[in-house]
Length: 83
Image (cartoon, rainbow, N blue to C red; front, side, top):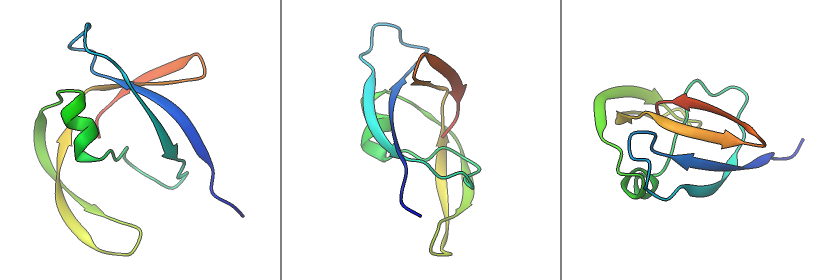
């Protein structure tokens, strides 16, 4: 089985005139949260709400900033999430 990728448009719904960011994302059907790189969070001017404990694919645990809300758009659909 191969990897599945999707092109997503991410934006900050709190700042309407800020440009959206288009990313190619790896689809993980087992993921519980959206994960984005720090440079994308900076581009979208997103602020950290709290720190959350996460476990990544190789088994490591880390405390990372939880940010949001983020508007995620894909193929004429969208939702609002934290990351």
